[in-house]
Image (cartoon, rainbow, N blue to C red; front, side, top):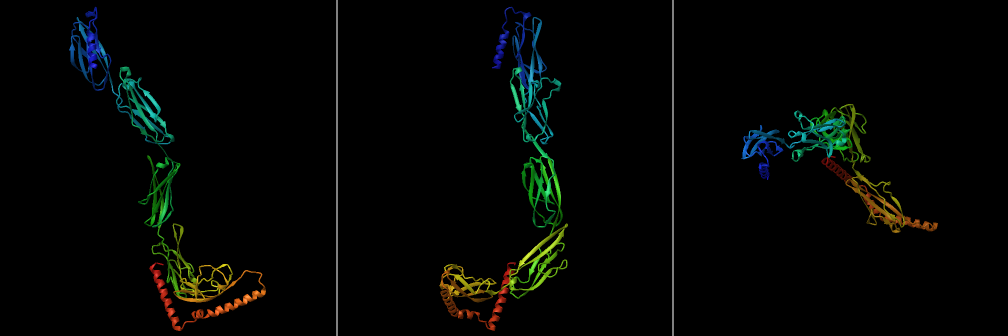
Length: 546
């Protein structure tokens, strides 16, 4: 289409006007305004109205090639146009030469727009620089650069007033950092308007840069006990206050060369890390906390001392002795405790010498069953007094007993009320209790609605592995009527006494037989069984690490 228009224009230019002579001929060039992209080619036609032109051509520093011609025109190809220039087109007619000029403008769109944000992380209230430049663009006077923060225009600049020698397509602005600017997007937009040259509008934008604002004005603090026990898990923490943004703070915690695994939390402008430390070597060590945020990094150290102090060892010669057995109780320090601790055994008559165990001897009684012995060890570490305690419970074995306080021999029930036979045996192991009434087992756990039929003597027997014991319990059921005359009351009491006597007589022989003393051989046999049971209990205890 462009070539078609060119040839039409050439033909029109060659049509002689009425009265045209060699003195009035014209020279023209097409296009009358040339806009060429850098490095591309341009087709130029030079023509005249002279009927019989003489020498003709174009003058230019650009590489030119004549590609076509006619009686009154010539066509040239200009290649690799890289700079602005002025082309002269000339024709001679009857010895007279005339020429015309064509201004060639080279343009280069802003294909690369570079935005620099320095620094990328900026401390709050400090200044930062936003710079935009276009490495290659032409013509510069038609360029406009706009700096943007989000959609907000920070600065807009054109280059129409710049001298050619100082051509540099860039714009720079300094801004004071505010907390609200954190994570703001910055960009630069370049526009090249060639409408004055008959061209269009070219525009391009830079990559978006994100600004980071931070505050890091305090040193981190470590919270840890100055004393750590070897092998024991201890909580430690590291805290940093007046920091922004707190949620992006990173923590690295170490005990010596051992890296911990902290759990990081934050609230407001404070961030902290909690971790669990378990020291594996004794002696002086160092707990360190490395905190980083953006370009900032700071390390805090705290000395700690790791000690070894296992609980003391409490040994009872026999954990399940029979009542009346002589036993020894010993309290000693653990072999891994250094230095040797001071020991104290509850109940021991004297304190032992430093480094020596504490001990006591005793003859077991029934009252010692369930008695707790405690062994206390104390040691000074780095000026602090540390105490460890070990406790062991003694279990004394003894035959069953039915004491009057827990199993009254005379009990009174109220007629019509829910009643239960009161009888709690003593003994270790815990005795099993069986009560009978008129030869029938009486259920102790089930409340009975008292009637006159419940009056009588009950025989209760408590049994464990060491023996058994029996006891008669007389139960009297009384009514609640207060209008009964004294005579009737006396008769009732007399009848009750009679019934009780008969019941005691009827039940005398079964319980009496059980209370008879065993012969001498039977006593020896029971004694032997008691010893065997005690040995069995001790073996069980040792098997379960009692």
